[in-house]
Image (cartoon, rainbow, N blue to C red):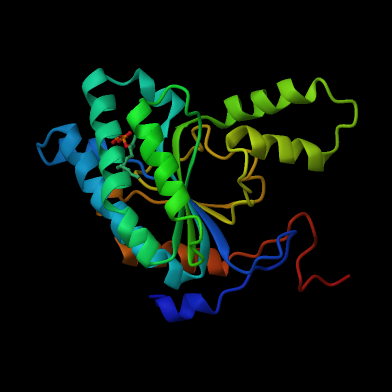
Length: 252
Ligand code: FPP
């Protein structure tokens, strides 16, 4: 099994990013099924999932990860039963209250991406406070996606761009980034991991995943340990990223 030390020596194959550290995105799926299989209520699956979030976030800086983006609540998740939505928002609120000191201590910068206009005012206050007090963190940029939809974000950018005559890839990308979060940069994703056995992107970071390596595991999120996380990174390490170019060992 790949160790954390082994992973520290990983570098990117190539690409446009100058940063050496990786951007890993996580679709934390399977909380509900995990709970049902154990005869527990779905909220208990989310509770167990939140503990895994803490473990994975703690492991990330030692795994050469510079940015970790977690899909905590999609814009489509508003369609879930009210009590489940309320429970998830409560978990998120507790995370913002209880993890901030640890983030500051461990040099973790926290940002929340997604829409804010449908969140409760007390959650928005907590988000703003958390982002402000963790802004200087250098060890890891932790981004949590809440009320997030890639398609919506791209639509917002397109609306703004319709007033512009000079549309380049770069200014579209800037607008896209601005529509998620005005003062945030959004690096391309290197590795996207989805737990829970499904193999889809579910409207998550569609633009940023253009050249992401995809890793799907049947492990349900509440069971996804730091060892499983290392395994995923080990698999990523074996991939050859070509970004449209020919293989490095090609005979030409
Ligand atoms: C998907 O599993 C998971 C979610 C919609 C919520 C993810 C939330 C957490 C992991 C905990 C809170 C997060 C933070 C950052 C504090 P599902 O409910 O769709 O599972 P299922 O597919 O088995 O039903």
